[in-house]
Length: 390
Ligand code: COA
Image (tube, rainbow, N blue to C red; front, side, top):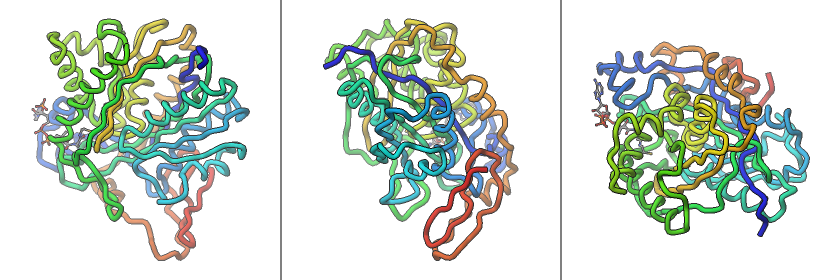
């Protein structure tokens, strides 16, 4: 077993062309906008254009990483999603022609609700421990979609996060210890015949809190750090208030009081991006990490807690140490530009996008040209998705 640190060497984020302000949704649903802005902690959510899907946003997230680091020794590409475009072909295979992934690589898609990206990171760390000369590209990409006029609707969103995982990483060295918890529970699922997820919201909030606590207990049993050692706690954020709820639950379960100021210090900086991007399922935790790194004061040498949850359910509590000089490797400006450049939707346009269904007849259908992002779904033809760079 090598002792070389393994972790996140680069992290890049992309989101969709459109966004919807929660004030627009609140007006339509006849509720106070503060239910969303304050109650669930969401102000806007990213919405996919008609010519975007998880492949186009995954490609946009991963391209800057390949441009900066090349493809040498990237022998594994793991793409986690729960909104995949095909039941058989791994979505990342489309990225070969879009961004030039190497052919001498294994390319696999991972699924376990919002937890999948963390599985990718763990598998990547294992591969690199076996051979530290190898690098693994991990991509988490999702478009969260719930039925219109349901409680889940304000917790939609979309994003992709790509991470280059290597030995001697520039940003975050992962601790080798993880706490795990899995159980069979129906809190959120999407049968193959549905395009929107089904969620039992209150059950999922409770299941998340219990799973996070159980994963923490396992982390401690495995010899993990103490709560007081962490500079920040980065949680999966289906909506940003969930991170606060889960952290309060964790602190109280360990006999601590959870003062509002302490919660804010532990969580606040992780929520800036998620608050305006919405739920990005597998990407959400890593968008929280990007937000923390981009907004917190110098974190050099500090320990971070990472808490991943995927309904169904699997949770993992893991940790890492921020590397010296990490700030020079961040993509803060590009991350903020991805968010600020979104085009705001009115309600009718949002609804039309939500209700649109892709053709299934196998004939040629050109997709409307909407997105100004680097990649788009140009057409459907012969039951194939035809992608193009813009
Ligand atoms: N001003 C401020 N806060 C307000 C408010 C107002 N005008 N109106 C309501 N709120 C608060 C509520 O008090 C509640 O806060 P609390 O959770 O701290 O008690 C919060 O807003 C949400 O209100 P609630 O009535 O519980 O919302 P809801 O029944 O519409 O459902 C979810 C909220 C999160 C359960 C729902 O959006 C959902 O199902 N989302 C998808 C599931 C999900 O994301 N699960 C997470 C685990 S993966």
